Amino acid sequence: MVKYLLKCKECNQYGLNNSENNSKCSNCGGQLLNPRPPKYSPIDKYGKYRRDYFKEDFKKRFEQN
Ligand SMILES: [Zn+2]
Image 1: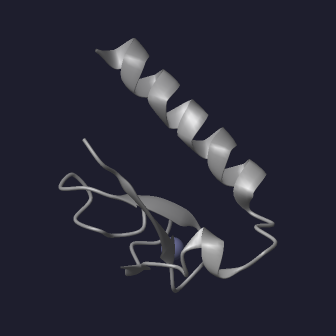
Image 2: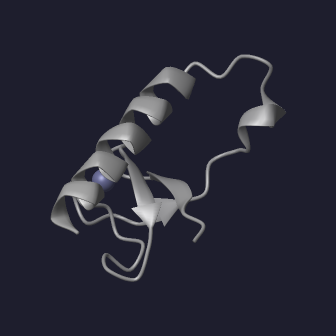
């Protein structure tokens, strides 16, 4: 199971590309776009945020299932 982290072009929130939200931003409903791959930039300033996001997301899914 592979999830892709996408970024909203309207509000710059991060979201996951999945069939549930149909690649729509959960915050404003805007279109989610694929940001540049992290390795494109030597400094990934959102790395920590992204890890925290996934950690929370996986935790929620774990508790729901
Ligand atoms: Zn948005």
